[in-house]
Length: 117
Image (spheres, rainbow, N blue to C red):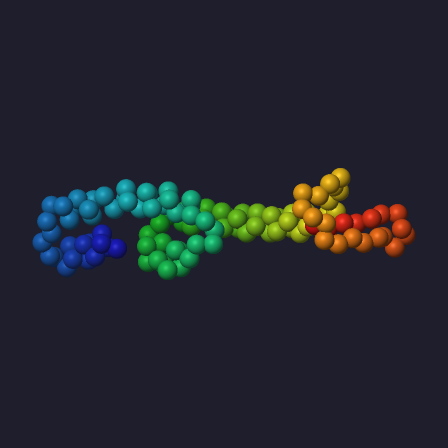
């Protein structure tokens, strides 16, 4: 944002110091660095929505890459949740308990004894 403000001042004809001119000259390098780090952000970040003015300056490929990553993160989150549900639903066969047994149950057909600790 500082660079944008300096560019506005220069466009109005204000005199800028040498360091400020260097900052303006480094704009492309800064945007490339921001783009590099932007695609590494987690998919659920709100950074792009909160900084739309800066995002407008980024190459469209960066935003597309981020959207792709966001979608991949969401899909992975859904797969992980599905695996967790499946894992919780699976019966765990144990030959012993590490904690005291707190309850037992017999299957309706009488072939299995279930314990929980």
